Image 1 (spheres, rainbow, N blue to C red):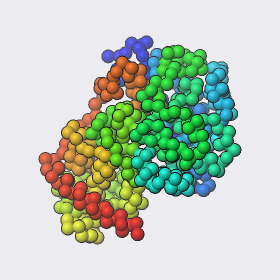
Image 2: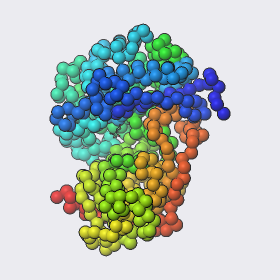
Image 3: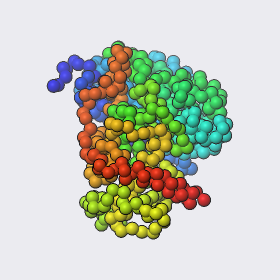
Image 4: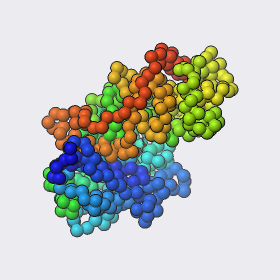
Length: 533
Ligand code: XUL
């Protein structure tokens, strides 16, 4: 049933690397508007490629902060032009690419407080940033600061135990430390540091928005257990950082009403609330409506795995973040560089460049592949840091080749055993009711998903969500205003479209893969020792 023309709406935004997106939903969770602004093509003056500038050193990667501000001006105009009645919006929330940072110049809070609705945000805020080119998640120029931080806190594992991750160059604390050392004057002239998410919330709020626990977990600064800044990490990063960051807050917090600028310029209601913005990965978890026991596997150029975790065990690989929808829980994020390109290479070499032949090979070979196990790291892998192709027979002996059909099954089984092994190492466990949610390009291949289902011994569902982060934020906006009446996030989104069941595990799957997983772990250890020497 269509919602009444004046019924409430909830707006979700996503400031991602290449574009700014918006989704508006009604209280029945139906999408009523979608819109976006592409940075490269719609804001060409900023001369970005893929939304970023890669600096001559090849390591430094930044985005112009004013491009993001201008994109918001443009997006709101587009939404208005498309007929969105802003007065119906009860709450807005959003997400940003994780780890990126925004440096507000001294005096910017006063500017934010008195925004003139006759002018555009990018005109009003052009002098409000001490650093014009914001470091983004693709930056890898802070290696030195990572080493310093790990040394200061007592090693990589200790840092992971405190913050959920060992030091990563893209993590914000290390970017802040680098900026403080390399651009002391700009740093000195900074009154507040935001993440991309809290910067975007700040624009709506007209005052500095808190960093939320979940996105804050991607900084190497937050103690994920106490959910407060770690003094040890702050001190090792920069002086007075506590003051520059402000206190972190739950990701479900209602931060306050939109600023009068939005009321007067766009006709937002004075009572429209801003719900804390968060990182794009936590927001995707909300968009996919992940629950305890579920695992989301995105099968793209690289494969990404998200899991809901109750008892985290931070390690030297992967990341643990505070959970964006449940204050007691956590989420883990794992990235695997060798995903679809590797599957495609094996398809080309062993299946005559045909996905149909590749699928037939999966159908015609037995679960467990006769005990053969393969590791396919065409490029140096992130999880685990190994390289090369390594094949082992059922006696753990190295072999140099297999029949094309065995090779096809080996690449897919090996990849999914690895996804499961590394998720379990961070504290994930399969429980009754576990669902595997598959997204991304390869999620349209039924035979690949059957192997996924068998290896995880759980049903696999697919989700057609091109904009899970954005939709997740529209859900989070709705939850923000309903949470006060005690409703959990899962209560609020229970009527969202259900994912589609595409594969259920074979009756022998558990028996086959339990043992295989143990062997896989031992063999991976051997591969790692070989490639690290
Ligand atoms: C996660 C990460 C990326 C960005 C992409 O740690 O760096 O997924 O969030 O926007």
